[in-house]
Length: 392
Picture (spheres, rainbow, N blue to C red):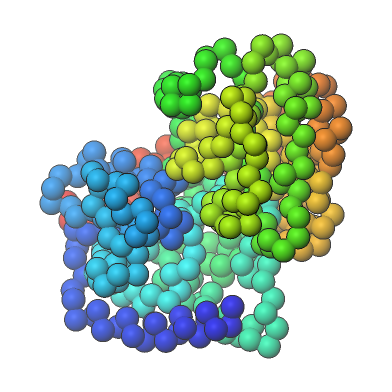
């Protein structure tokens, strides 16, 4: 990490050469997950704006070279190319869903909107998580660059604002307290049904099939066996059939993109069948959440998004004590309101004893406890902020 931070400081100096190009008042650059995919909050904002503005506004996406040919109808620039850096340094508005732009010497006339990629207030991140010893000052300097560059940071709840303010050293007046654009879909039954139908058609799944989505979060290590593969799928499917009177249950397996792209993961792939499907490379998580009749995860913030469906959600956490020591949480996991299962047997019992009414009340309390800002209008409101800063 120390070498990476030093390289960033050098880049901050070198990229100033692009100051010879003026900032274009009608240029907007989007980026998700460092160019891995076109998805998440930035995509929902893009989709809204693109329908409003005319050809006078220049909109582009940053993508990695491997993705460049996947989006023929969208203007893309290859990440880390000269064009990419020129767009970064001349875009009036830059929208991203992660950190990592602390090496970019944005000008005061540029607007940087961080949508982030997680709601709620769960696992600790950044300044609240990392401790790199003697070079902590260098990391703190990186955080300072980030906070200065950020014009707006989207927040899903009061607790999110407090946690992100601490993690990124951001002043509270930089937070846009409107919820996350990607979660607007959960406030429209029609949109949810449309997305669900598209996914079921894509994967050839009947409307009567009960879909379980298993989506564990990222582990910051690949050296030791991960619990991700210890889920006993047959026992899970049988428990779901028993509790929900489902004739056919489909299990969607979706792993974090950092894990899915690793060689160690690819060598341990599941044996997929007609009832166990790999959806890890499907770009938009929200589409899968709209389709799922049940979510099983661990410490992923997808629980926040999915909680607005009020559908069954379970935390499968065999490594809970270890995770607490290594990462820990902003909000104690026991207060989230989701059934916690440390073993397959506990998961089976929790599924079979699931009570819809009690669970819905637990989710309502969870939203209240965290101070939810979600209302289903975030996309439209954030689009207004962007349009107020560009010539269109």
